[in-house]
Amino acid sequence: MPDILIVVVIVSALAFDYINGFHDTANAIATSVSTRALTPRVAVWLAAGLNFAGAMYSTGVAKTIGGDIVKSAQMVNEHILISAMLGAIAWNLLTWWFGIPSSSSHALIGGLMGAVLVAKGAMALNPTGILKIVASLIFSPVIALASGMIIMTLIFWIFNQVSPSKMNNKFRRLQILSAAMMSFSHGSNDAQKAMGIITLALVSVGYLPTLEVPVWVKMAAATAMGLGTAAGGWRIIKTMGGKIFKLEPPSGFAADLNSSLVIFGATLLHLPVSTTHVVSGSIMGVGTAKRINAVRWGVAQQMLAAWVLTIPSTAAVSALSYKVITLLF
Image (cartoon, rainbow, N blue to C red; front, side, top):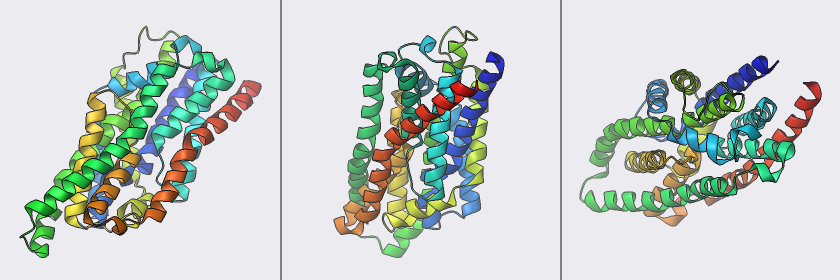
């Protein structure tokens, strides 16, 4: 039974990574598709390939997920991790169905916290590590909004003498580069979250001595995210690409460039961030640089409500899942 359960943990973590891929495809390509810099098919395959490459880049975020939420690997078991994955997957599918951009990172962290709380109690959680992770999740979209506004303002200032048509043509080509950067940075941060769960599971049952991510885990997580990205996430692309702010090639380039820098900076610091939140913050920032009422703040409020609900909702589903799983197995 333990061997079967560890396989279930790995499969569920890879399923989460696959869903994360198509759930968060919009993060990487919504701006370039909405401005017609890239066709949807080309954009999706570009994102899939560079998500895979980004996922192979490092394992620092994986170690943060695996080591900073619980005090030690011995305090979790397969039942806890399966429950955490079920809560996160359920929330991702629900928000995808309704086209709401929500955070897979929040869903995963909320799921793990909920399952650990009901199984082991609050003493098993690492408050210092959780505070660091939550701080990175909260401040990253705020930073993205501010820096997005700065980058867009600089673009307006530098190209203020260029005609709108020439400016659009120039930035439509540049968007291919910014979309590639965004896709790579997305893979470098998001795929590591599933790697962290799988590695934590392997350490908890004694298959690994430390939280060093094996190559096969990196390959499996990168492949799952790449395939998920290739499946596309058109419902959320519509929201990210046009409902927050009507993007044009210069603003689309600014949003992608800014998002990629913020996300990759977090990866270098081994901090998990929500790519959805960062991209949304960037779009709001570039929109505000044009004029504050250009941003559809009503849509932003709906997204904020989903973000606030994510951690408690996934924690509750994971806690309930743990109770059911322990009764069955």
